[in-house]
Length: 186
Ligand SMILES: NC(=O)c1ccc[n+]([C@@H]2O[C@H](COP(=O)([O-])OP(=O)(O)OC[C@H]3O[C@@H](n4cnc5c(N)ncnc54)[C@H](OP(=O)(O)O)[C@@H]3O)[C@@H](O)[C@H]2O)c1
Image 1 (spheres, protein in one colour):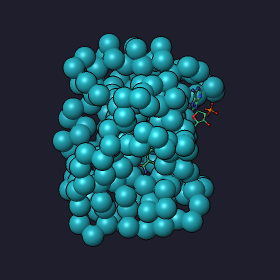
Image 2 (cartoon, rainbow, N blue to C red):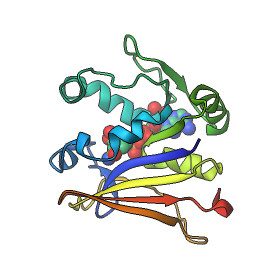
Image 3 (tube, rainbow, N blue to C red):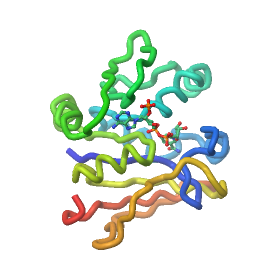
Image 4 (cartoon, rainbow, N blue to C red):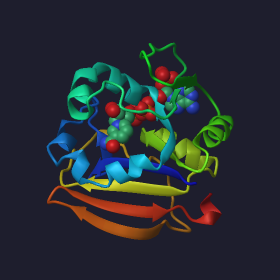
């Protein structure tokens, strides 16, 4: 079982625009033609921050069009927020706040032998990294630049560097890089 931060970023390192638009990403290809179907099949638990969750609430219709349902996850999802947020009928959601370590422990129990997906945003992935709990970073680098936006991974990770384990192209729009987070940094 691995804890993976899996996300798409612009070439200049942003996962969304300042106003949380993902339109730049959806023009780059169909998610079914990427590593996503195989990736999500191995996921047993997810974590996301409140901005990402609220994006899904706001875009429920688009998500349903893409995936057939407004909440596409059958796995349990932990939502980090200091606020009270609406729930979604039929979704297996846990609202949590603060230290990621006890949450990760609960996620491991729920995931069993499957993986833990840190959906984002970047700082939440950074919190798991800070706690030594992040094993892999998988990024689909999109063939666009945004100039500014929500950062992919707002941390300084220099020595030892990440260990690049694979590179894969999905059409002209996406290059996927898979990195192992070195043990000393965990
Ligand atoms: N390109 C991609 O693949 C991809 C992947 C994921 C997300 N996204 C998009 O990127 C954007 C990410 O937004 P974001 O950078 O603002 O990140 P986010 O992680 O979605 O949301 C950040 C918010 O989550 C809450 N939070 C985070 N850690 C917490 C903790 N430990 N305890 C309690 N609350 C905590 C805080 O808000 P409150 O306490 O006020 O609730 C914080 O401001 C969204 O637009 C999302 O749709 C893109």
